[in-house]
Image (cartoon, rainbow, N blue to C red; front, side, top):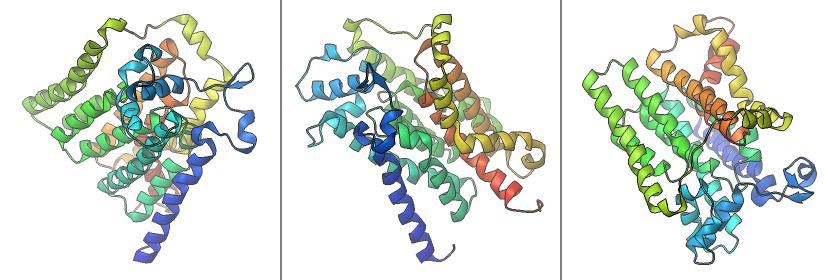
Length: 336
């Protein structure tokens, strides 16, 4: 595994895996038996929220009215704008080309993130495969949604947190806001990291304020631009919760939790055994990331149409835990 040729081999396999895993549902073509299990309305293919992003691309190209883009989707202009610049006629394909590029950037930064945690090439490339060969990448990444792109920004942001690049992190959050609001997950992870490393109160508060402003200012600007369309809030309700208690939603959440999530549970079960081997500055922010994602899932079940998209961000934080379990709990007969 240490030879350069072997590394090149696994990198090549990883590059191919990204394309192969995302291809069957690219542009919702749903090859083979997949078509039996994908979303439909009255027997016809349903594009879900992707319809609004496709309309957004048309708007930026001057081919459609902004009124076709409903709230809150209007608050997410960046990816549709980038897609509108591509010389690709199909709006769905243009969005998914951006999504595919985002997958590759995500894998690159995930690899660098795992290396920054102290994993060698073998475990870092394994972590990238755990991300790539997964239900979310297969089912959601190139179907016209924006999750692949926001996952890219969340991965970049997490890497920047552990590299302590606070100004760049603020930029990443600001860029992430017009992609999707989920970028806010990075703020508590960063604050906990600062707290664990023993930052002074002044540095912790000033950095937290910087990151909050990086989220709030673009949010306010976007909402101000579209103030004429009214406003949108996610209001919790019991009826929404009951609607989300369906088998399809629960299955999607479980599959998106995936192998890294299952192994992270094993990590938590073995916490006392493993925690002494892992620095708190590495562990606590990851636990925070998992915790806030769980809160996001619960909130989504009360306010929105819940599926695996809300669980996908957790994989950034569960993959390192899964690798620690493999390194210390499965690959060795006893811990040195």
